Length: 326
Image 1 (cartoon, rainbow, N blue to C red):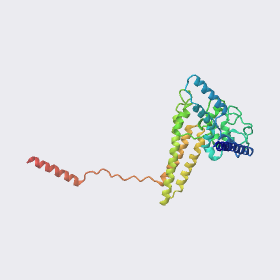
Image 2 (image 1 turned 180 degrees about the horizontal axis):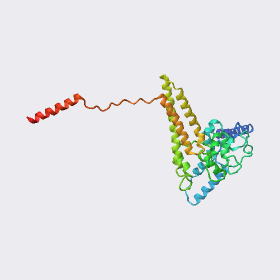
Image 3 (image 1 turned 90 degrees about the vertical axis):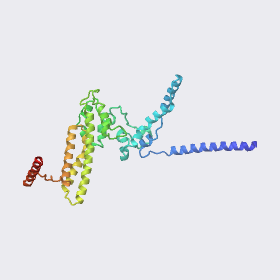
Image 4 (image 1 turned 135 degrees about the vertical axis):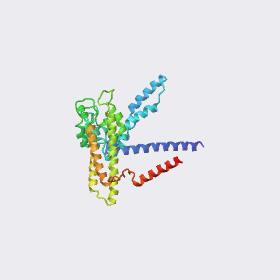
């Protein structure tokens, strides 16, 4: 019995040793065969885990909290570190930039073909360095490499002039948050523009947040009007109406609508509204062709009592007079 038990223990120990050796062998093979991926920025940042040094620091904080009988959760600190470590990649992964294949080096620089962090980050500068392509005053030029129309309009804005003079002013990432690059909804502008244009910050005009929100709603309404007009043109053409000119008017409005996004970055709301109104005027012309106004109906003039009416009235009076006599 004792010999059999000893054999089992030896077998278990042997299996454990074998598993460890296999793991070590697999790891060495993997490491020796590691090559630079197609984009090492993505491969590295998507696998970031909590930083070891930061974990140690938070562990020390937790110990100090416990010594003072202060309630503390290690998971809370770990979650925060994990968010910091992986947030940039996660946000980018869900962005339109990821869909279009615009990766880290397009904005940050570096060499995505290198396998090691040191080589991949060569000439890489922190965003607090004025020479960095993502330093706040350099961001417009960096974004402008892919968005030249937006840059052209932004360079004509008061925002850009203040940014050039190194004053506090919005840059691209003020509205299009880094790594998500989302386009704001109309209701977002009240808070976004209100960060500066408010009585508290003393940046006039104070009604800019409301005006910006209203302008974006008008853009959405223009889009709706264009879609309605195109549908009306489709059915009018089916019914044999000549819609050639109506289609031209609608195409003009559509082109204007497509130019609104770059034009917005000039932040000239008065001009922006005039352009929207001109596009709506084109839609009105198209609608007048495919849905002409009905002709006004002829209203009959009030009839003046004629001979028959007058005779009837006299007869009624006579009857009433006779009855009273009786």
